[in-house]
Image (tube, rainbow, N blue to C red):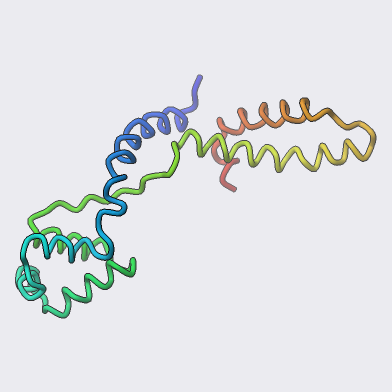
Length: 153
């Protein structure tokens, strides 16, 4: 039986693939501020956008700067989106699939757990071959994938 978190990760991975592929063209589409780029494309001055938002022109300029500096809040972005009659879409898109992330972390934890034991066994002349060690790590990693609490301590 597949644990719930792995089923959820698989289902979310399907959706994230679409987002990951769809987001790719936007990563470098605008240098600086999306607010500024949209405002310019719509032909809105900072003062005009400020009037729509009921803030000053300087506040709009500060929002654009905050966005460039990764310091803008989601609440501010929502207000700007409303003024543009637009929708704010917020997403955290993992660089690789969630299942790959889980598997990689499980392997990392397994290696960290087995390495000291393998070293001790080697010192006592009871060492295992590289092949056996790799198999033990793989087996432990598969078990750890089923127990997410042990992966992220």
